[in-house]
Length: 543
Image: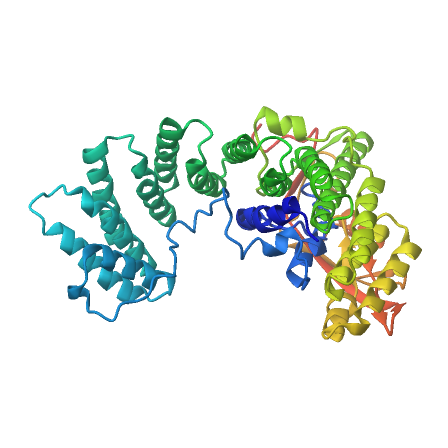
């Protein structure tokens, strides 16, 4: 029997992860050395919940279908109760309240043209009053704007919202709590037009009104915070986006209390957000806290722990990869002290504040050892094996593959191959076994590769790599290593060709399997280079 606390968690907390979806961009397996690489483990992890068809579903897989208490979606504020029964009467025979209900029902049923018709009737019914500032017009106008927005009548929707805002201000003042919804929706219309600065100002006003009405940690500000984050991300202000999401998490902590199981979904959403900003140490701490809370509330062998462990393993792998990147860069600079590297290509966005500097791992990152990522994955495997009757074969298969990939990345190839074979055995009873085998093991999958950086070919000279490339053929051996590397074609300078071959030789693959056994496979890789390298003592022309 499931305890009351556990029921509450399964019904409430998992849904709150819905808003994490639009932030999540899983790190890729292929590592590019011209920017700090993302972790290889995260790629297949991110897809695991989507393929899970479990009786007891892990939190992430419920996130997109269950409405979230206290974790409002910025795209859900138009949703209404669809239990209203549509009337057989014509719009002219209904009262204003009935027209409003019918319009909301039709909007929920995606009958947008009819919803707009009823919404217009509701506004006209109240607008016929002798009072031009009739407050009874407020709700019909907000509903009309919703119908207009569904039909992409953005200009008309903005006018309806502006009128509703004006009526609320006249009726209750500029800090009336009823202003929150129309202001948020007006801001979203500005977002859609790309006017993010103006949208942010509206969301800040909405947040300020919520503060005055219900305090600094009012839950009414959640939609404004999420929408504000979107605009910050779009405009590249990652500092502000990070601060906004930190405060968003504090709202839930204040609401439920530190250590409450109901704070776990928001904590995980924030951890994923931090991961995408490469704030791996912050993300790791959030995952660790979520795991501890879940263990205390649900037990040490609960299925809800699986996705948390997968997330923790991904973050730790990312930390290790980023640490390796900085170590390699430092070693390269020590070897080539006379050379400076310049690359005019835009780099990936990173935080510019002190927070970013704190998270930039120039030294070993605490908690980033490969063994800890491996331990998290092993524990996830133990939990799903314990609940094998409740978890689909496809879900267990995916987690086993993640564990195998981690072994390969740590160059524990024999264990990796054995783990892959166990994963394949799990598919014997799956209806889509052949499809999954082909998807995961039909051909070699590149797990790790470091793209060569531009190299100058002589001291004191520029080297422009725009338009240069190199292509190599090679064999991916049954253990995932690379052999027989041959340069097929290249117009890059000789030093870059040599470095390219070296990095191809060092790359790591998940091998192809045939009838449950790994086999060698011929592969090829083409790399295109760009950017300019300049020797340190070179001087630009004209100086």
